[in-house]
Amino acid sequence: MPKFLFNVLETYTSGTADEYLIVLSDIQEAGADYRNDDLLEVRKPDGTVIQSASEYVRYAPAAERNLSVAFKGLSKRDVPIGSQVWLVNSERSPRKPSRHYEEVKKPEAKRHSA
Image (cartoon, rainbow, N blue to C red):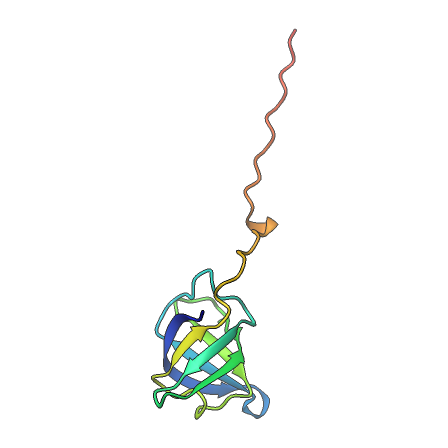
C-alpha cells in the first residue's frame, strides 16, 4: 500500500539536455522508509497518476534544505506544483544496519591476578 511522502513545492530541470526533473518537497526529511532508487507515485492535481524511480538530491555543501528528489525522463508537466508524492514500496523488510553506524564496544581489559 502506498505511503504519502510529500507535496511538490517547486520543480526545475538539470543535467545534460534537462534529463532530470528536480522536485523540491515541503518536508526536511523523508524518514527511514524512503531509499534511493525507490519507486514513487506522483498524484497530480487533475487526478492522473504516474510512477517513476527516483534519486535523492544531495547538496554541497550540506545545508538545511527541504528534501529534493530527481526523476529521470520526467518533465514539469508530469509533476506539476501541488502534486502529491507517495512511496509505492512502503511495505518491505527493514533495512539491516550498516556497520558504519553499528555501535562497537571496546573489549574490557583482562585483569591478571598476582
